[in-house]
Image 1 (spheres, rainbow, N blue to C red):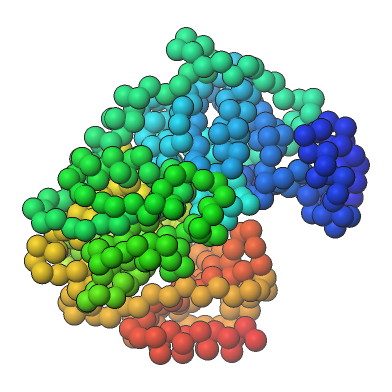
Image 2: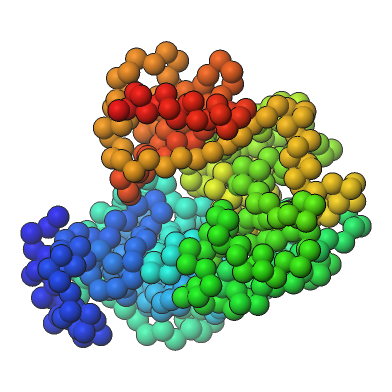
Length: 518
């Protein structure tokens, strides 16, 4: 922590009158937390609690980050251009406008959406307009206090480490109050700031629908919640074009950064569906997208009881269907290391290949660039899915389309998606996947496991299997169970990704690990 946090706090009192009331009421501990460090910029850009301070999300931090981004672009690219989108979070529109103003102030042509748009639309837009990079203002599925700033490369995927490091270096040189260039926000077709033409959204919809086509003549009863996020327009547009008569959870229909009915708007979590369950009324499937609409989740009506499908379940069902389609043989599914291993068995049955990547859809995007038309499907266990080459980030609209289409497709055969999962288990064996979070510092735990002399331990730290170096450990057991250990990069937590044939076996694996680390 910087020892200058009180001085920096004093500078803000002089320069940031809009935050004066908040600044004057801060305790010393609050001042230390807000000003003792800078909000970290990495491959996911910025993400933090909104408020006053260098370690918070606010317009001054956004302007400084954008000045660093502009310096990086102008130093490395000729006539760079940038596309900008934003979600429904509080201050997202304002932060997007400030991003455009700073880029224009540095002579960079910028395209910004006039209304909120999901992450996948931005990824498509970067590619369609041949931009040098893109920016999305979002904190994904974090709680209402958060916002963030994601940076995308010219391929439409989130930037990788080398480019993030270059941008961070430029940011570190920027004086927050005296070193930022800005222009007026005056969008025009021939100026440095332009609104993205409506035709780009239409092209996105056409490309997404073509990439996720699953035909069925059977109707399916859908209840959808955008969780007060950016999915409302594109997902309901998709429903209309596909002939789905979906209902909307009314309390969660309109964009609202306070997320008044859902503290933590994450479609992975059961509690996210409370309001939807109250309105389900016997529907076949409940579908939810997160605020920036890159993730999708669902609950399925199984004999009158709604059951949540995990991100791994959804990925498994889509894999099962896509691998069985004509023309799938020889193509490749790309999935993160920590996603369910059952897809390897499914793919092998249909002569489909599987590539594993580090965690983060940017790594899947990089493999898509290499595979081209041989790419079949990409997914992460954290409810992220993509078919087609139109984007390079997970797409909740595409995922929602596939889920609803598959629900209709299998309903025609007298099956629910739960029935399909059971069918997969019968054919390929049980594979239960569970993620366990340990509240502990990552480095000591990882060191203990490495020093335990475990036979067959796979260590990704040196960079193996063609993957970059990563602080990840993997254990494959003789009964085909699997444990992957991965520390958080931002919190004192370690995640355990466990796959086994039963809950009992998962508990045994956790108990054995506890003996090693304790």
